[in-house]
Every structure is written in structure tokens, then in C-alpha cells.
Image (cartoon, rainbow, N blue to C red; front, top):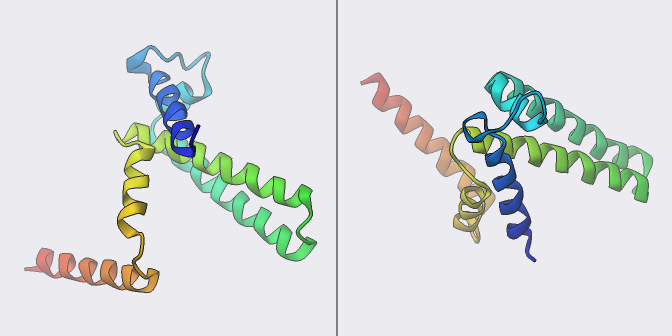
Length: 129
């Protein structure tokens, strides 16, 4: 079993929780978040991102204990989970993210960021014309 298999299985479960696929907001946390709409799950992503940062800072200042590392892993898992709900809502999957990471493989992060910045400037200039 690969990580991709685990993510794909979770993505399928999330997909099955969509109200359109029979998910019940009264019985499923995922269905409830999806039913409430983007504001609900995007808020959760923000909360989980903050908790991830705080857990990492706890390691920085409290030492790399097993307990603190486990807390960080748990927070990242929550962040990934809620991000996967957003992906499902927007018709995307973990495979789309993995494909993007693979596309970036071997590319300098500095170069990638500079390219995205330049593309953003080009798009802004085109809109202004």
C-alpha cells in the first residue's frame, strides 16, 4: 500500500460524503462541512494551518520529543484532511496535487517562485490592457 493509495481511498470516502452522492449532513462531519459550503471548510483549513504552525513552534522551543512530534503529525493530518475536502468540493483530487508536485520535481524552489511571480505580473498586465 502506498501513500497515494491511502490518499485516494480517503478522497473516495470524502467524495461519497457529498450530499449529491447521498452524504447526510446530520450523520457525517464531511457532509456537514460540504453542505455548509466553502466558508466552513476554508475556515477549518485556516485553523488547522495555524495549529500546524503552533505545533512546529512547540518543537522548536520545547524540544523534539516524541509527544511534540506526534502532535505535529496530527495537526498536519488534520490540515491535509480539510484540504482534501476543499479539493473534492472544487472537483479535484490528491492525484492532481501529486501531479503538480511531480511536475515541479527537479525545479529549484527559488526558480519556481520567480516564474510564478513573473506569470502573475504578465497576467496583471494583460488584464490592464
